[in-house]
Image (cartoon, rainbow, N blue to C red; front, side, top):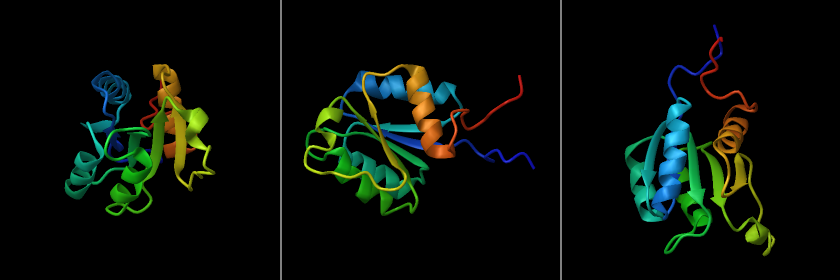
Length: 136
């Protein structure tokens, strides 16, 4: 047994900015993840009703429903869902004594493809090698 996942991890990407959604979708898709992208919190909740995800990547600051409101609603459909808050406002993240729970992390944007992949892999697998580590 190799210990590798039998299927690619499924990631739900939520961001109100199209270029950010495309960047994350492309980077993760090329790394072997299956992705679904939506533009806002309500669409994320609807997607979670229809599909099971292993990871939620959500912008922290979005109109209507912020990322820290999206996460618990999506988690209602999948226990143990990992959450990566993707934010340009990390300096404000802990301003009001906000806390990250187990299985949560945050990543500043903008970031590099490598930085994104390493953050996702570290959160999902506890290492930076990715989901489908292949022999070279």
